[in-house]
Image (cartoon, rainbow, N blue to C red; front, side, top):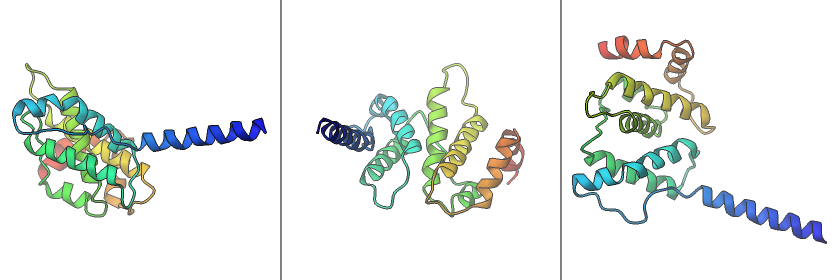
Length: 174
């Protein structure tokens, strides 16, 4: 009887911990109206980006939608981070798996926030590289994604140590 009780308790604990792990770190109520508001939420944005990177896609995840909305609201008005996403190559890469756009913007933004300096301008190519690495990681992690030869090409370049060169030469040319 004690074994059954023990297993039942462990099962309930595991289920509750799993449920709690799925909750996004988005603040319960937030206001993004002034530049100071955006700066105030930078630590939460990094947590949300990390959560989005680690949490699998699911067809109807309300938590993921809340996290994406908070991230987009923050990105659209942030005075400290701006990600250029109108590049045709970037749009082509995101065509088959639209969620990967959040991975790119998240990787880029996280790099920009964690590596910024008052004395040195942001290295945009390194921020793009962080964005593409986030795309590669998310693509490889997801079970429910469309196969994409372009992202697999990026993953190959990354594994060969050639991704940075591609970003600074090929991506800039197009």
